[in-house]
Image 1 (cartoon, rainbow, N blue to C red):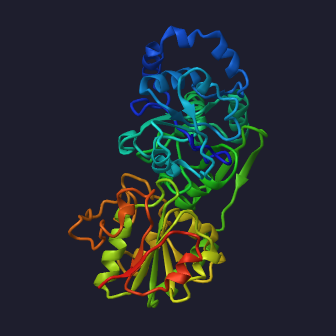
Image 2: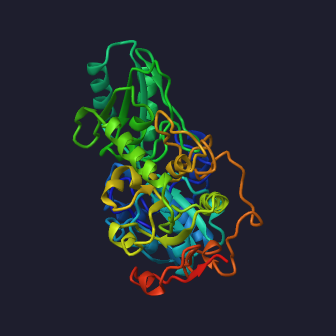
Image 3: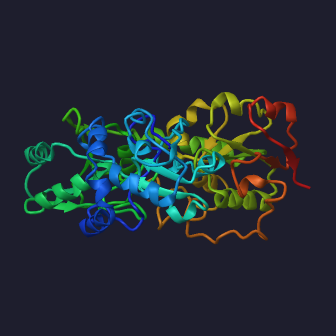
Length: 440
């Protein structure tokens, strides 16, 4: 099972794909299908008492689905894996995947298949990667709905905002059901909006994907701990004040973000990249972070402009690794946009997002505000995971799947190619299995 190293970086799943948060009918329908021998199993209930009482791990449904799948191997949450009773009540062998998991994009179905797993349970994240995309492996997403003191949250909002205030309520998937309930309570006094950035659930935001709000919105109220996801909607809506309610400490605070500093740093990196000779393209291999279609689009643009480039596959991107490529003048990472935004200045060469690369290559002008639409259904263009730009076909791309099997299965040998020959000795220092083959 994949598991989170920290809250917000869940590794094992959620609801069935046809279930939606707050959809009581769907939840009841699934509950009615679970056999009574599982729902009423006293030993199972006793074992589940070891888990936090306000965290809904949907143990009966997990046991039922594992039995249905005839699974031999399963998954769990690192910190709670030994407490998770699923493997005691099925014939399945449970495997806990300890690889780092930062978010919903890190669903590691490729590794699970390489381990011979039949069934993968991903806790703590929404269904960002559709279950019909994990070919040959059955998936179950468990959102891990967390119950909090909703009455204190309600009273905090009423105490801090005057009646009639226009509020946008957002959160992460663990608190979305509470957010929906609170929004209904507040509608009689406030202008409440629970925005949706599809394919995310209403009210849900990610660190790389958040909606643009109406300009008459008076405040953003984020329910959750930490700032990572909140910063996403702050970047997308710089003119709207943002507040955070921490459900654990019950602290309500106004949050700020240095928009000018961020814009200046990213624009400086783009300016440097615009005159760069050799480009490095990084395809992230951590779970499903990397997007081959974005990589193909970038390659197509660089070839059209006659820019030499080198392609590298990395699970995690560190400055020390990229320093092993002194010939590369600028990097574009197709993994997590926030890596460039939050940590770009830690790298000796510019580290761009695909959107920033599009600006540097003059495919699009610098956008104001900065777009946070990496997984949004309605995104700017082909430099996002589901962009509206023209899809690349195999005949349009020079990606050779015979020489580059990673496209078909990233658990196989990695591949690095480009118009710039790079010494194999340099690449092997990365600790990866890489082959070098410059384009002819």
